[in-house]
Length: 238
Image (cartoon, rainbow, N blue to C red; front, side, top):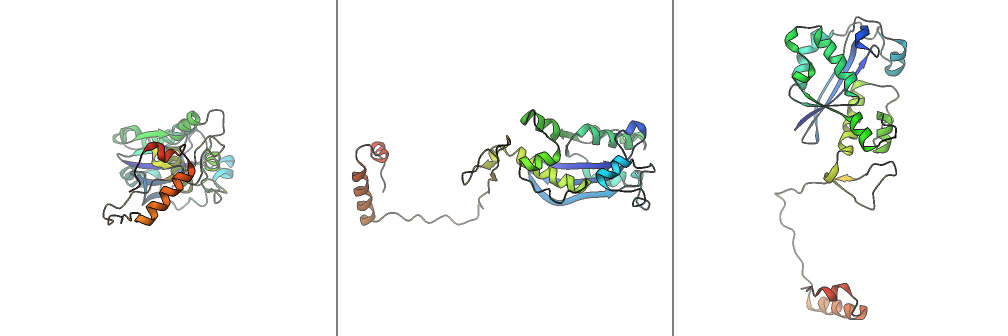
């Protein structure tokens, strides 16, 4: 399964008011494993960035002056995400902006739904943790994902953090409770992923107990009395 964890930064909150995408960040996951394949692009929006948006991501119009426009990067971006399952936090926001950008190009592009399926991790988080904060920072804390570098929002950084959160949030039976770890008190279970055994590894050597060890073991069982579970089971130790 090929999944792309995606995030965008924009000039404002509403594409219907003319706001545009200024940054796209994508991280690729195949069969629940990170690859080194990422997509990251700043974009010249030809639109003034709202003060409130600037306070969130810190990207200025001056910084974007020499960056390509969406029409210049559309082919590369759509090639990267085509056929993948997109993982997005608050998907209607990002998908709405992407569809707006595509609508300004040739109609042949259609919409994101024509190229990808989408999973909204905000919906998923609200179902798993009703009544709790489910923004990205809250989820990072709940699932113990280090977000100390997130002083400002950034599309690629946020995509990387969301990818970690998503894999932990959807771990299911791919996680083992080890070392007494369990519910983290925040409604999430912290665990370590199963490590697959190398099928090429040589078989483990079996060392059986010798006569003296078996005799000592039997004496220990006798001292435990008739209530000993091992004696009741009738299992052989040889």
